[in-house]
Image (cartoon, rainbow, N blue to C red; front, side, top):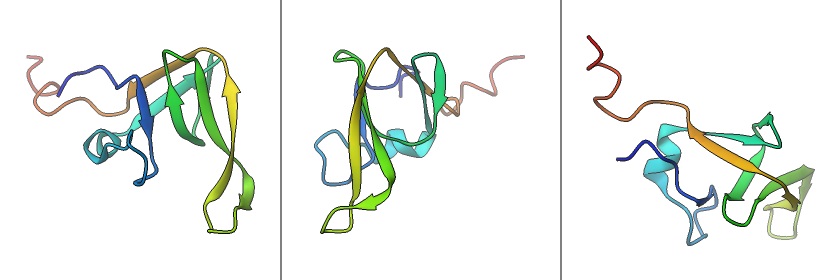
Length: 88
């Protein structure tokens, strides 16, 4: 696994941009210089994030989201397997 997060990722299993292995490592998002913990989906080349709109849901029970534009910087919260132990 590389140490660079994908350019686009979603936490919805129905999305074609869903990747359980990457999400299992943990992804942090810095959006417009601030840490965001409520990001549902992001795209680095298109400079947008999709965040939940409070606790509102659609008629299928999925959270309503809003797309926000701005610079997106994803990063991994945990190192890849074998990278943390080889530093001595």
